[in-house]
Image (cartoon, rainbow, N blue to C red; front, top):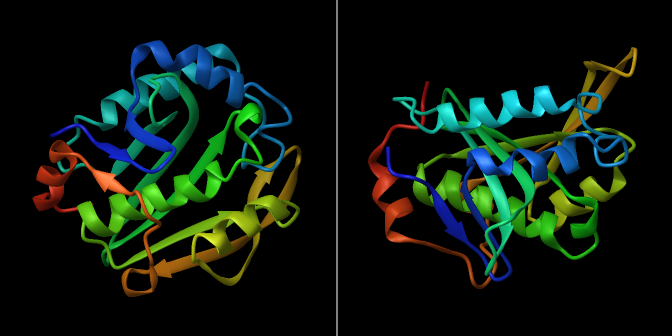
Length: 199
């Protein structure tokens, strides 16, 4: 499997590496950064397991999960974690989380565009969808700015912080997506386009 590397005007997506655990812990161990996610803050051991699983998923064949590090365009350090998981019928679900220092800079919208570039341009998908906490208005703005459409509500979708929580869902179809200027893929990512995204 060819490693994924996607670039945007300000960010890049790359494969997760063993050295990313501490930077990932700064996100997933932070109560504020995980406030609207579907799980409570993680311990270092739990984050290490996420790192290990992410690395392992990159070698699966066929590959149905892309767990990627978000970095600044000209840096290697992880500032976010993005995931695309393929589903039947040329579809996938996406999600991401960014370090607090990266909030409010448009990085969330660009991360969604990079995941769409992976799904539509590299994997040949037809539909991509995402879900957010009803209280996460910043996520709503991010998904809408990236061109997604609000679809509806899944009642009692996740159990977190001792209670059931709904999710608001969004989706975008390939023909609806308008890439932002500066999106690109390197040759390694493009050469991976022949692999089936299905499970």
